[in-house]
Amino acid sequence: MIRVLSLLLAGALALPAPAAALSCLRPDVRRAYQDAAKSSETYIIVLGQLAFNRLRIPKSDGTGKLLQDVQLPARLIGKALTRQGFSKPFERKITLNINCHGHWCANLSPDDTHLMFLRQVGQGYELDADPCTRFVFSNPDTETLRQARTCLAGGPCKPNRR
Image 1 (cartoon, rainbow, N blue to C red):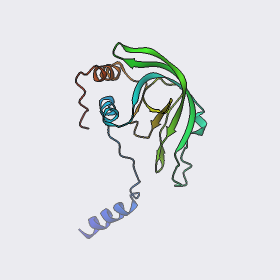
Image 2 (cartoon, one colour):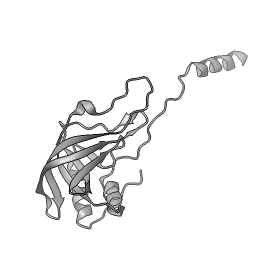
Image 3 (spheres, rainbow, N blue to C red):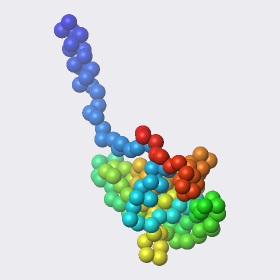
Image 4 (cartoon, rainbow, N blue to C red):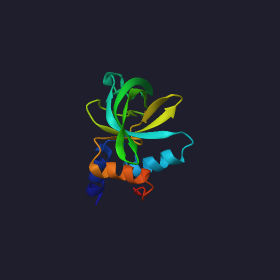
């Protein structure tokens, strides 16, 4: 019995200490739509590609240093969502707000197509991108695009619970 307890204790001491982890809700375009609709700010939904300097997105250097948010200029080319679908051409400069939480920052690629909820600021637009992808959906599937269209059309738009 003592041998078993000592082996269990030795095994427990050999385990690594718990690492800090980022806990996010599962990305859900319906939740993003509801959050944007409840906001006092104005949002538009755009499907398109971003051009920006990805090297300016903060990355962890392994030292445990907390990462800082950064704003990046970007160019967005795509189509805005209207009641007729993704039909309104959208091409303009926007500001990317890359938000970081501890050791994690939003991870966007200019190589991907993104479904984005853009916040109107004055005459321009900003994209708030965080590590939990609250308002950005990279390479969205047809179901995600359908859900966005359904929400805008006033159809069922209840987010998943998880």
